[in-house]
Image (cartoon, rainbow, N blue to C red; front, side):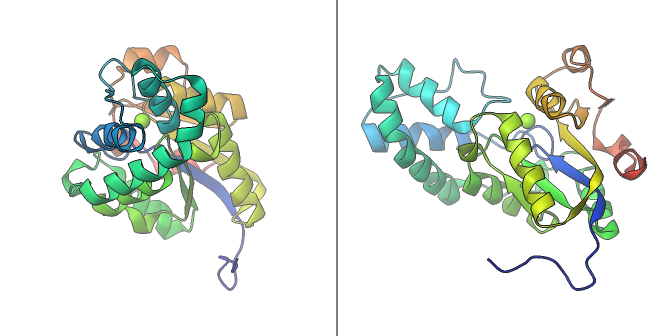
Length: 237
Ligand SMILES: [Mg+2]
């Protein structure tokens, strides 16, 4: 794999990781859920739904597992179908994802632009499958801000995803050993994942959860939205 280091590269003293849904974009429509339902139908013939599943803050493969379970599938069947479910769900979403430029959360573009300008590496940590995540970023006009990401089919939980992202940033020497690392998300699961790894948890109340619910998880910082995030919070010591 070619090195992604630029000439004259110096490791950054900060890394910022972003959740997608409810954090960078919101009200993105039913297409993601529909892609999961369509994948289950195509691969197994089963009719399923996400209706009773609290999908916010969950990883796509876990959502697919519950959908299959509710539709009557056995654990063995779910396990063996999973690789194909993941492949088809991404194909369907890539085909059906709408334009998301107007779904970008307030302040998101400004923060990303400012981080890029300062040369601070920016990554995704999301419950979305890889190609679904990148498609959303592309359709929202945010793709170019991100250097890399950790996606739901590559770890068993969100903390595992955060760990992967940090490991990659260190291996690529994008960050130094004492870099200040923050995870920005809209759900208690984002805050808990940051806590589990020992990095900064920044919560934004732009998703489905209320300020009160987020506050109860004691994030390092709780914001109404990204407009009130100062770069010093992310970069400063
Ligand atoms: Mg979210």
